[in-house]
Each structure stands twice: as structure tokens, then as C-alpha cells.
Image 1 (tube, rainbow, N blue to C red):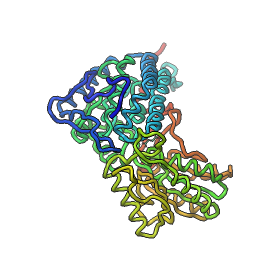
Image 2 (tube, rainbow, N blue to C red):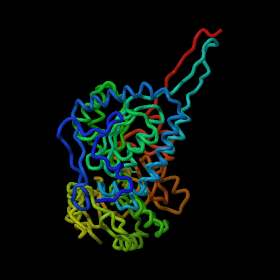
Image 3 (cartoon, rainbow, N blue to C red):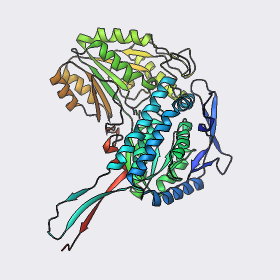
Length: 485
Ligand code: SIN
């Protein structure tokens, strides 16, 4: 399956309180390579008792870790980042085996994931408080920031390393301990990161990776009064359910949920650059990201030029196993994902949309959906309203700015939006009018550790990355010193 320089990075075990655990029972989960269907390996399905034990160990570790200086926590994070980069090829191979993305893209994700460790390694030294002028002359008011406590992170399969470090790094920088529940499809990347975290000097119990059934593990975590925070990346329906359940113990919650990103091309856009941005945004991870362009709106005057050029590029894309040289598009994660994408394209076609290329399974394998361009999409088609999560460009024509903004905003989601124009005034007008947490102007690749990532509306709340990322894992405590003489 893969040949690692460091075979110890591949662990078929959970990581609980700093110990590798094969679980108390024979229950396990099998992980399959989405490109081939082959078994990559298996991990234990932890029992409820084991999850409760992990929570106790995380709480125990927190009592000590909260007293570490930011500088010391930051040093561990930065060393961990360096170890990730040193072992990039091995980590990328593990990721490609379980997730399917091409190796070059997996290596890019390791860089992206390490950048969060590095960034928050620096930010750990800057969790500043404030002093506030008091209303009485014998008082002094200060505000300090303290770690939230034991946190839980539930991460998705589309970025098996990046979404882990984007949550774990700010938590650790703040002095929290973390119980991580990786997606059942992709636990091995998270487990490999634990090997390196240990080497970087992360104390036992600060990070645990709990493998197994999402409902069992999630249930224990959510009911626990010890766990004070939940950060979740995944679908909007699951996010809503978790949010409601967290009310029981009034946990702090942050949610990075679904998107339905518009990608608007105005008549005055540069066609080459718009096509490049469209490819970067739409086809990253075979269209399986929350910030992927989902609905293309193209103005009349540039429509033919944009569609023709884009279709030509899409026809030339190479799809296949992520380990093959030159491949830029991998499979969908599982058969459910494949069925959903097929259903959306078939329904659009039956309602009058035109499929210019693709639209069917690709010869590379059962879970490969050919890169596709669909035009004449209208708002009554499901493809215009649901997150596609596949390599399908869905295009609608528009005539003026007002119509474009109305179409773009006509969704319950509000994560990312993109538009292309060469008019400076329009770029200001449109960026302010779009109801989305992230806006790319003449740019299709917006994700970075230095900027706040997060959505509006039903795409969730809470920011990840940037200096604001720390806010999600720290509490402000107001201290009033009275009777000062
Ligand atoms: C996501 O799809 O959830 C994250 C994408 C990113 O970080 O760019």
C-alpha cells in the first residue's frame, strides 16, 4: 500500500492519555482506500468507558498544562510543525492512502497543517489581557485570559491533517487539552500527528485521539460536564444537532459547516485569471471542500469566452489514483458521495441543463466522478442549492450586478464567495454586499493560517486561524482589585 521511511508513523491504535490503545474489546473499524477499495488498516472502536477514561486523563493533564507559560507551549507547537515538515512525504503517503487526494496535494496539505502549528506556536506568547481604567480611584481593573479547559474537536475526512491542527494548535496555544475525534474514514493522519507531537514534547494527556463510533464517542463527550468546548467541522445538519446537544452543559461551541460558494465572473474580468481561479477553487480535493466554488454565475458578455476556456482546461485534467505521477484529481471519498454527485448532475440534466464534459463515472474506478461542466443551471435545480462536494462546475448566466448579488446571496449558507472584476469600485461594492464570511476578489485560493476562516448564517460561527483563532479556546476573566490605598 505504501512504503514509509518511518513505519512507526502508521498506527492502528487509538491514542489515549499519551498511550497507544487497541481498545478493551474486539470492536474495530476498517479504513479503505477510496481509489482502490483496498483495506488500508483498522483502528479500535473505543467503548464508552474508554472515552470517559480519556476525558478524566485530559482533565488531569489540564491541571498541569494550564500553568505552562505561553512560550513553553509555543516551543512545543513549533517543534511539532518542524517535525511534520521533516516527515512530509510519509505523512502525505498515509493521507493519500486513506483520503485519495493526489500526493502533491497531500504534501500541500501537510504544509498547510504545519502552518497552523507554527502560527499558533507564535501566538501562544501573545494571549494578551487588558487593563481598564476603573470608575473609582481605589479600584484597579484587569482582564486576564485563561484556557477554556478540556476541549473536544470533531474533524472531517476532506483535510485529515489540516483540520486537526487548525483546531488543536490554538487549543494548545491557549493551554487547553484536547480530545480529538477524527472522521472514521481518515484516522491514520491524525494518529501519525500524535507520534510527532509526542516527539515534540507534548505532555501525555494533552492530546488524545479517540477512534470508533461517532455517536458513542460524541455522546460521551457532549454529556460530559468536564468537556467545556466543542469545535466541529462537518455538515450543517450534524452541526445543528451538536449545537442543540451542547446546550445541556452550556459548552462553548464553534462550528465550521457547509458552504454553497458563489463564483461570479463579471464582463470586465480577465478570462485567463478567472478560469485559473475557478479551477483552483472548484477542483481542490476533487471538489470536496467547504469553500469550493459551488455555483458559477457568469455575465452575458464574457459567458462564451469563460465557458469555452474553462471547458477546455477541464477536459485536459488528469484523474486517477493519487499515487500516479501527474494526476491532479482523485476519487470521491465513498460510494455515497459518488451517488450524491451523480444524482445532482442527472437531475440537472433532466430539468434542462447541458453537460459540456464529464457527467459520468470516470474509467479510473468506482468512486471517480469525471471532471464535469454543466451549463444552463437554474435555481429550481437541486445542484444550485446543495453543496455538490464533487468535481462539477455548475454555471448560470446573469445580466447585471444586482442580479448577481441576489443570486449569490440566495442561500442559507454563508462561508466563502468569489468574484472576478477589473473595476475597483465594483470590487468594494460587491465584497460588502456578499453575505459570506470569506470573500476572494480575483482570487480562488483563500485559505491561509493568517486569516480568520469561518462562515455566516448556516455555515456556522467561530473563527479558525489568525489571531482570532485563540478566542475560541480562551475565556476573558475580569478581576477587580478594591480598596487600593
Ligand atoms: C474545509 O473544507 O472545511 C476547509 C477548507 C480549507 O481550509 O480551505
